[in-house]
Length: 257
Image (cartoon, rainbow, N blue to C red; front, side, top):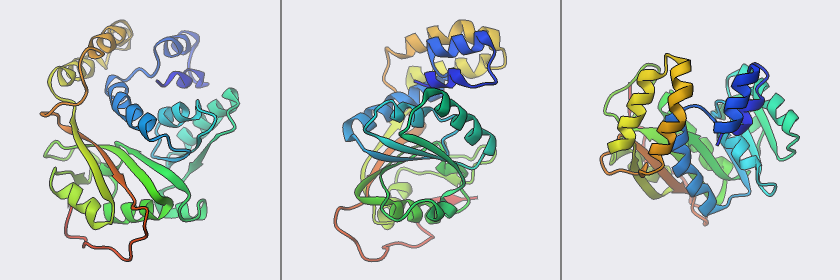
């Protein structure tokens, strides 16, 4: 996962070789990908919007399958440029990257354009969560899926604006007319401890390069899903039949600070 990032032009020779061999060097991201990939494989979407794609790992993963059309949406211009360059090197015609936000996505996509929208570690940073979910709902085809991952720490970290709760967040999705399919706790137990080790060594690139393959191998023996986990994988679905209006109000579903 993330092997395509090896083609980033800014990498040196050895950095490129390392990423090509081991994939994206970020333990939490790699472990999230395990559960996200499983859901994608089960649902088999053909048109996917990857919101806040970061370095583009999920977009590039999806583009490995020629029958999937994937679009990455990202506000950071440098990331969009880098991802576009990598896509050009790989010569994958089923992927494109656009700079922008969901607020201006209507300029790029008509309603009901996608079978799946990905929001992996994105929703906690948005100033208007309800407006975002409304726009996602419009972009999804009837029967389409919203798949994401959010923290459930009980407190906000720097730059985060939304807290997610096991009762209130599913209620918000329901209020927006989504059918909540699953809300799975992740990153507990041994997996949490391995991520803490990775975080502790992350300031030393040489140490990371030595220990990362070992941490990844150890993590493979343990499930990312854990009842005591501090994050949530969630999957919601837009009903196949059209629903008139919205059920809820802005006061329900999440806490914004």
